[in-house]
Image (tube, rainbow, N blue to C red; front, side, top):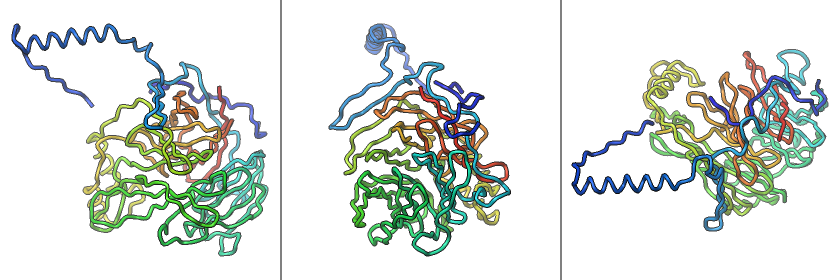
Length: 441
């Protein structure tokens, strides 16, 4: 594939962290002199005149901005970076935290998130033993917090991790409970530890500057057998646990089988959502569009890129059915059950516009390009395969800059000013949290 913009090179950057559809057109025949012939001739002449007056492709604007009912729309037709310009991610990691044997602090399992604190400390939510682990900028273990248990500083289960400033928020089970630690590992408080009858499945996904939380309630739908779309309620929850419903969005497309088992429709369509500087950004991959909402749930911006849908072909459907029948993908059961599942699969007409978005700490949008046939896992953050992942990068105002590649199999957890923090698995499924260099400009 041709990549517009930079690709990963072979040398790491000097480390800051101290480590050295085919279209078929049918034209009717028209007899010369007939009315139809005259109309056709006029159409040809008009088209020729229009083409002569139209600007050349290299004169077309790369992007356009306009206002529509108070919503700013930014649409890009081509990247701003020229060939050879743009940003680059290092081919090798600056830091590599993890091991398959050795000291316990470096043995990672079921990592549920990670972040880099302002002082360079790497903080990891380790789901296997429900600990929050702290490492210095050289990757040396410092301390751990939390642990498995029911105490005020402990967790029954870690579901996710995010940071705002010097505070680290840990999503845990039950879903609406959030525990907050300092960047130094001190337990600060527990928030929103309630089970709302109206939103019993609400989970925190980020924080606003006033301390309120962005939460999503994705209550599983109950209904008849067949395809269905599950929606999610977007909430802003205050420190007094008062929930303000902002909007409802599509969450994922599922199919329910007569056996009671539920799985994704294929290819997978799922919501990608993030928060940055009190703006909520989301995208449903039915089109290439990122929508920005303010803290009150009002739409303020749409970011678009030119995109041509790619049809789902029979070869893809056959491969997915064969994958299910072979038992790959975590679906267990006797051959008869797997055959029933594969025969009842529901497919979309085209592949998604992307496999998820990530908003970096500088406010840029990273939109992961889909590769038909590769598996999207974890709602837009990880993609299996041996090829690097392409990301279309947009500036905060919405202009498409170009493309950056990240290492194959890297689950991107956070992107900072000069780094990309991610999770990789080796051939033995041993987990490693890795920090890669990012050169901008």
